[in-house]
Image 1 (cartoon, helix red, strand yellow):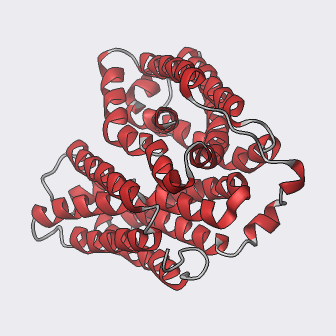
Image 2 (tube, rainbow, N blue to C red):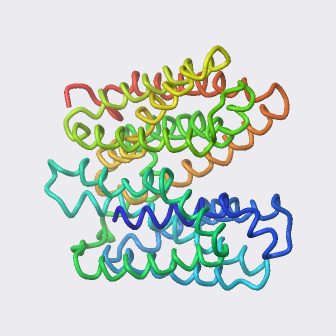
Image 3 (cartoon, rainbow, N blue to C red):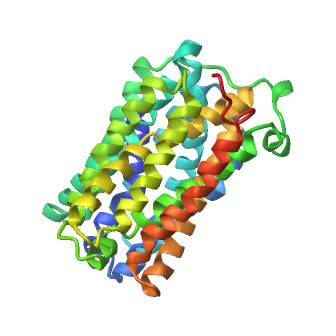
Length: 373
């Protein structure tokens, strides 16, 4: 399952490191090539809820295998695409399969282990995300630069095959949700605790992406002599450590680990805002940022799973939509700030936005993030 999340995130972010090759290979501008990332996110937003609704009654393992097979096909089509139009369609469909897999993985991972290890199992399943961001995307970019961008997508197809075979051999199956137990979407959203968690997700992901998308302009704006690749590597390694810490305590201290993570995130915003004084605060800020954010997805999905219970898959499909919309909005607002006030205002926006999820968790002590757990 961790390998599955690695495939999903790598497929999403790979074009960002291959813009030059994509542009020359498809005879388009780099700005147009960047839309291969946007259309993937669009596919996820459009498909997550309906795909989950259509498959929630099916056994989980065939759905997992079907989603991975979708990545095999769409990455292969992208690698062989003769034109931008074909590549865009393939990316849109890949995003749709991502919406399906994101929505079902959380509940599936929690159901195949003893209840006391549910949060830890989810953390392991989500480990593919920070690994893809810290290691996978830079390696994919390097592969595209030394060979051709098409080979990078071909490798993703090969990895999909490996994951499919591995899943067939070792992943236990789990039943779908019985028809009589399925709640409509609006009733799932009305479950106590679900709305505060979704508010936390949207605002926290926005706070993260408003700066993460523009790390390069931020470093340049503050005059920090740190390469973007190195900055992202520092963040990625710290994120992995944050995820490990989350995995060890999330099953018994969800509220405390979430508040602690948000506190680190806020501290990071403060330090990153003082980067004009010295590069040292920026490096420390990157580390705190990664530590605070690394376990965020696991913390949010654990809270959502505990609040929604048997309706976890539907709740997580809404989570997936909210997550990707926050990524898109963060990118847009960050771009406006960079073009207007300049990249030096990004940490301020990050910190101000992060106050909302911190307050939401703090006030949700009875339902979403209960005390005494």
